[in-house]
Each structure stands twice: as C-alpha cells, then as structure tokens.
Length: 114
Length: 113
Image 1 (cartoon, rainbow over the protein chains, first blue to last red):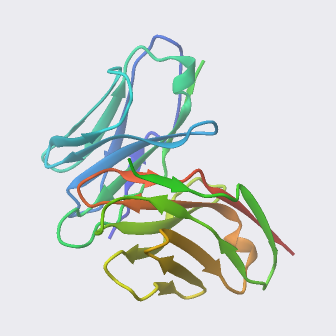
Image 2 (image 1 turned 90 degrees about the horizontal axis):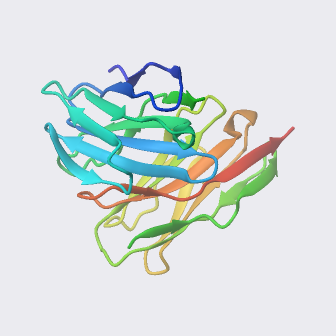
C-alpha cells in the first residue's frame, strides 16, 4: 500500500497570505489528523477528520481550518499567515475502526512564512 | 487532561550497546494505546512500536522492546544493539481511541561510533 502523501513538500509564503496544504491518506483509512511541529512547541494537534466530519479540534485560532473529501483526502488551510505559522505540518491517517488505532504519518509540508 | 512526559531531552549511546528511553503518562482511562515514534533528520515520523493498554505482554519489534507498567503509568523503550541508523528524535505518544493523540516533547538519541 502507498503511504500517506502530502503536497507540497515545501512552501514559502509572506505574511498575510493564505495557504492550502493537501494530504492523501493510506488507501482504506478514513481518519486524517493534522499536526503542527515547531522547535519551541513540539508536536501540536490541529484537528482530525473522519468521514468528512471534524471529530476533534486542537487549540488553534480560527485562521486554521480544514476539510475532508468523500475520498478521505484532506486539506488544511491557514489564512492571514503570521511569522509564527512557520512550521512542519504533518498529516497522519488511521483506520480508526476496530481495535487498530495506529496513526501513520506523511512526510510533512515545511512552511516558511516571511 | 492526559499528559505525556519524556524526562530525557537528549541521550547518547555507544554503537552496539543498549539504551532505554523513558516515558511516563497521566490518564484516568483504562483502555488506550501507547506508541513510540521515531523522527530521523528527514522529519518523516516512523512508527517504532505500539502497545495496547489491555495487553499485559510487552510489545517487541526486532531490536525494539517496551517495558509497559500500567499501574505506574510508565512506558519505556529499549533499543538493543544500537545502530547508527537509530539516531533520531524519539516521541512517546498516548492515544485514546476517540480522542486526539498526545505526544511527549521527545528525546534526541545520538549513536556514538
């Protein structure tokens, strides 16, 4: 099976712009979670989508939003970018059904805000 | 709220030796999952090992094994016969099935040749 894929891998934006990141889960996985990783804050949970519905949400401002499509692919959007949004954004997918709860991560999108 | 604590920010081990990374967590739940993830310089998070709380037997994956002490809420990772490719950031994580996964701050492991 192909792993979790994320596009783009690298992105440079300027303050005030908006950005959309994409995540394609492992085939058959219906849950997609997003994380922000920074040196100072570590790994922080953004949100999780399951069957096109947001299941959980972390403590991030409303500038961070996401959605999931019927094929389980997910997008994350950040509007009005700030310098502090520079981070590695990781996506993870999981079957979320039965007892298998393991999350499998994609390679991440590195976002730099100038 | 659940928390995960990794008390060792950095560790070093000689190649071929054994090293143990510590992790403690806090939860009032009885059914949950614990993971160790490895993040090498490529930044790709790789699952190392998984433990289901209802299983008393410690999980093992080749050179990697855990010491799961449910009552003590401790979940340490033992790496035997350390190899240069084991150098990475290691994250301990807690996951209760219907909630978000919670990561520790990580332990950076250096392998000395």
